[in-house]
Image (cartoon, rainbow, N blue to C red):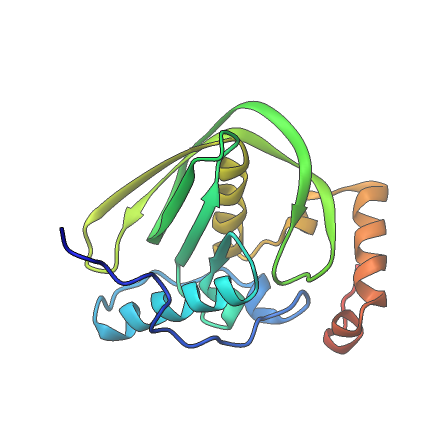
Amino acid sequence: MRNRPIPGSSGAVRAMSLLGEPVLHTPCETVTDFGPSLVRLVEDMFATMYAANGVGLAANQIGVGLRVFVYDCPDDEDVRHLGHVVNPRLVEADGVTVRGAEGCLSLPGLEAGTERFDHAVVEGVDVHGAPVRVDGTGFFARCLQHECDHLDGLVYPDRLTGLRRARLLRAARRTPWGRASGVRD
């Protein structure tokens, strides 16, 4: 049996984009170049996600406006899901709607109850252009929906309304990173 390198083990940790930075609020471009730079990007994304103790990371979270995300996320049965998707499309999001605590590496230290479907399916390709289909339930379904939102220029506070949204944005403005990036309503 062949030993595969651990994802991210040869990657570089990159700076995290924070709420308020334009790259997080702009839809990402479709990947058309499947060369070594894409492989390097995915490696760097894994390295950055692991360094930040995350379970998912979209390319725009490290300032790259391309449709790519990586994940290493358990589902509600504690089954580990590990991989990446290039040019993902959320093709199914259904089942029970669950409000659960949601955080984001681009909003460090904050979380809010956010509604997500309990089942999600994402289709796309891998770094070599081979088809990928990822089916998730529970916490992993939340992760898939969250990362697809990022690539569409959305962050989870965009899914919040009323007092829940106001409280989260007020808390963000009080953080050092929120003051520096000019977080607004």
